[in-house]
Image (cartoon, rainbow, N blue to C red; front, side, top):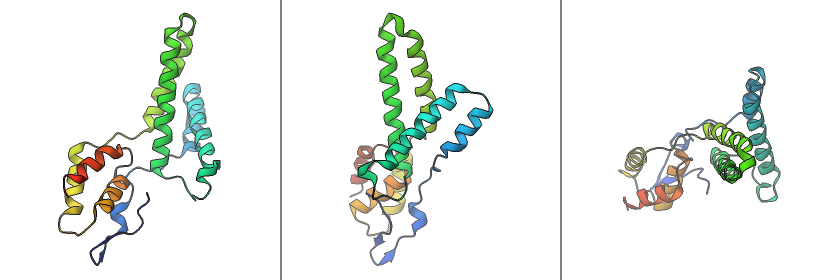
Length: 166
């Protein structure tokens, strides 16, 4: 769900309210800096992330979208991190896979560094109170703007907190 313009009663809500707080990841700059620093593990991890971003851009279900959003990037990064963590635990159980498990764990940590920290429930609650107070916004509009403001936060948590105000 993408929020472009939402109206609170008859007053348009400014677009600045819906700006995403996290900057888009410039993966090419990260690859370049890791290459300059001769950090092979980081460079390879960033290349893997870039390939997943490219897969997303060229997939059939995303053909109509013009750009990848922060929420899309975060979703990809979380999924990729979970995959590497699962693979590391699988290799850890094998006697001959300890070195591979260590590499997978390191990659998962590097990818995890790209994922922005989730906002606390108090921060989300304060934001919701701020936009709900004095406006006639509907439930779905509040959920949408809150997801845009905090893209790394789980949607279930946001929905639960927003429903408290309605």
